[in-house]
Length: 101
Image (tube, rainbow, N blue to C red):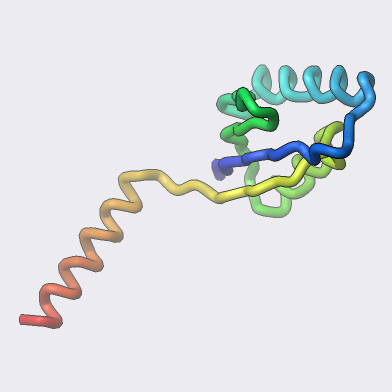
């Protein structure tokens, strides 16, 4: 499963340097292992990534293992293959058209 993660830093909490270094190493391991497809920082702070996990619970555990987890607020969205999305929308539109005919 793929997840879109967005983190916004908590402005009044400055993380220790050791946490920043550990977070950088953690992200590098995730990118190298395929646990993350990509990771980008925002100009204003925080960032976004596409992360991979087998289950929602595995994503939760991964997020909790991130060394800077206590210093941000997170938004996590499960992602779906776009072809599946369009097929479902098409089927819904066909059902709606048939019902109104």
